[in-house]
Image 1 (cartoon, helix red, strand yellow):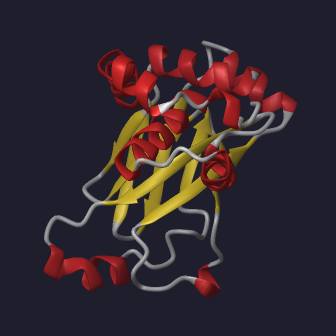
Image 2 (cartoon, rainbow, N blue to C red; image 1 turned 180 degrees about the vertical axis):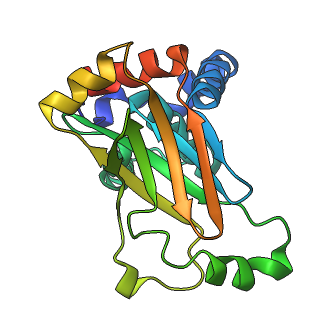
Length: 193
């Protein structure tokens, strides 16, 4: 999937004018691509639309308009856009009460070690994380993850006869959620781009 360019980012005036419609579209898309895994994890699959919405909102709040600043933001946010034959997502660790942050993060340590996957039937595609477990600090509750696939795995993902499930397999978070047909169609667009 092609990264966003500075030229694709709407001016603040244009964005403000169209914000209501763009927000509805982005919110609906994010909801379609959002999966809750047990009590601890939420996975939201990202694409160009979800990333552009985040960039536009941030620039709107910060009132940033310079092409240099937009380019700087895109250099960070474009990392969320999936590449060829991969899905990209944000993994959020749910922490219901602020005073429990340290306990929850400690309990979920090891989550980066083959605990989050997409199952194509019986075959698991494990998420790759943007950090190594060795450099992980106890205050990280948002991760950027990718599910790289081979051509054969992409074909299996496209096959409606093959079940596709998002899985968490950690001692403190064990869950499986089927990726329904509508969400699967949306994710297929990412894999084809």
